Image (cartoon, rainbow, N blue to C red; front, side):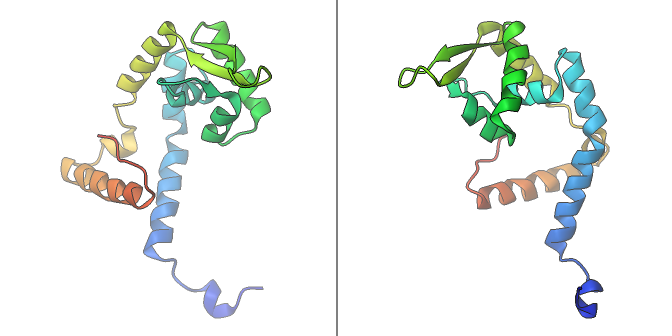
Length: 153
């Protein structure tokens, strides 16, 4: 049981910000479904294609880790991308049992169109005034910097 004073304490500003970010992402699910369906993809397939490394082959397990899902889930995601000609599976140079994913020319084209489309923010962000959008960018870039991740322009 929680101590009575703990149960009534006000969450920190960081906890409130994190909860609000989660609520924005959750409320944006229909938006992401619409974006993905515009490319005849599921959101998972869209994120897989968006997160594939274009400079080198990426293993199935690396993609699973990037997507935060089990390797067996990635198999069905990659099956669909491969059937569309967006990715190819190759045996790894170091271990034939390991499958490496290579994005195809068609995959690169779709990925670029996805990138362009995702430059359009969901309504929750788009409806903010410019000053708030700029402030949000600055704050999120600083948060990413503390994680060692570069902010994207």
